[in-house]
Image (spheres, rainbow, N blue to C red):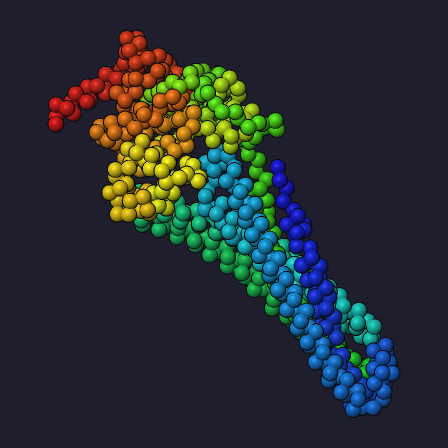
Length: 599
Ligand code: UTP
Ligand code: MG
């Protein structure tokens, strides 16, 4: 299990961070120095008061520049400019570096999360809302990125400035500093208590946003169903409810934030007026130079900014922290199905498949398969038949380890498949799933998905074997035709044949077909099964079929009912034994008779 630490993400960028750190120090220093040329001019050139001579700075200025007013003025003017330029350079460097670090961390995090999500077990994806996962891979990562870009060093600048100012103020006049800073604890208390509440509120907002994305995503991916059942209004209302809740939550969070900055402002204003009041008195009584009062007022004015920014950053931080937690939650999800410590690369399979007392459930206490034992010899064709919901798809899902059985073993060539790495196991299995998913890409790519790097001639051959070549050629751009996201521009049978071609091209010792003829008419089915018969030669094949006429020639037929195998054997033997199989067969046989009579 990988543990995500922010430090690990930042480590590769330590050079940039170190440079950024220097820039931050420069930025804070120039911030602090800003009012000093003014002070020098006020105290030494305008001479509102005789020099108190506090500070090495005044001494330094006087000893290097001399007592000449004009020289001091020139020095102060140049210093003001120099401070501004230095500040600008530091600020640019810091912003550039933090932005680039933020972007790179986002990139790394995105890849890390995506790779993890893709490898998580199917049982995780079965339960997780896709939209929520999408918002974690996009929104939450973005929150972290923007915090790193604006907050990570920004916190430092503002804190340094905030700490530096009192130090300088103490140095000038500690008693006056106490007055000026008397509001600080109140300020701190307010900011702290609000930050926590804001953080909680933003977490809820983000969660709701994830749910909204889920709703939209769900509807858009099943838009046909929505339209077919004219449920647009219902879906609209469903989104409206979610959206209203999100508005409410966002407003709550926003109102917390909106209360914070005015409160801060008022508290700072109280401080400023106290400084003005007492400061002016002290200047008049000669306890403080006018230049020093200017520094104080300047600092107080400036103190408001870093405080406000820090309090803004708590928001960015809250978002990032929530995002970080949500991302960590995903990254720390263990895979139910994972490579065992000693897992090895699977050797080339001969193709004997065995189930030994396999029991399996998708959810605890709801067994789907019970005590399944079966054996399929290398090169044989096995068929699974049985009523819908009997557990046929579940049985074959265990072979490529989409799920692991609760008890019992699945073996290939006599070895438990858990001893092989998942990739090396799956590489030797071709699947045609019950539900065909095609990618929004040319036909070429959709077929070659089964075998990256397949040559054109391989693709053509696979298409021919799958009886798909003919109709592909007739499409507007042949193999270059882009087919829709879920293959919507193709008929069911065409889609199925492309899926078969995708499996064919892999040329694996084990072939699994989950109802490859779903939705095909008898003619089309014959075409597909001709293709499959050619394909199944010399491989261990498992076919799930509803139409029993198509599997008469199977070497062994397993009849599945309620999660167990109730009959097994060859077609003729099963017919003779007059069990469930013969019942099903006769039912279908009559049906075909009827339809033949009808037509
Ligand atoms: P199967 O999907 O294995 O049944 O589900 P099947 O034999 O292939 O059915 P058809 O012919 O394609 O229709 C077996 C049981 O497992 C449950 C289903 O509710 C069913 O009762 N199941 C299936 C889950 O609980 N979770 C799943 O993700 C899939
Ligand atoms: Mg099924």
